[in-house]
Image (cartoon, rainbow over the protein chains, first blue to last red):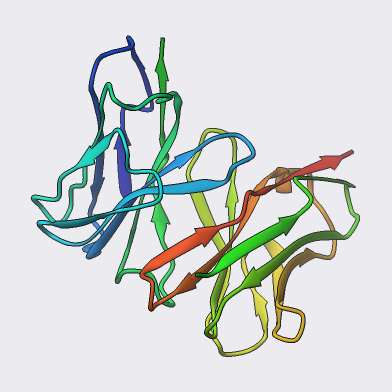
Length: 114
Length: 113
């Protein structure tokens, strides 16, 4: 079955450590996205990528970094510079960047930093 | 830039009652509109989408939504709520020019037995 996988489901880190969240898709989609979800705030865009080796900052990119070396993979690194990293992180993909095509979402990774 | 406002962060209905979740959008160009559902600790699943065809859109699980340009609204309805409908619902608007999708803050639906 085609879809998006995110691993791990739950992640615990100590403050000051960088952590990388995995996102893989086998839908052959060109565009991929990372969102952060906090209670009552909906989804906020961190980074998106329209094509391999290219990505753009979203609304809340500070303290995060990404890479897009392969079409199917879009890992997100939460750096120690992110002031409040504890959140639910969602990865998504779409056939093309926005437009009439919907985004497909992975199951999410819940990151807790203490 | 486009935006979405969902009226009511929490909606509670009885099982069998009408479900109405409100969404208003702002967009300078004809929008593409979406409703997603999220169950606890899971990703988002598409319920339905409007892409400038029929203004009344039918989705999965008995949900439907009507695009009303004059009211800039895209409210989600279901005639009869089921316990399994309890979840969080997100309205979203997409604008091809800006290459991004904007989500509302979400509405948590509770279904009482």
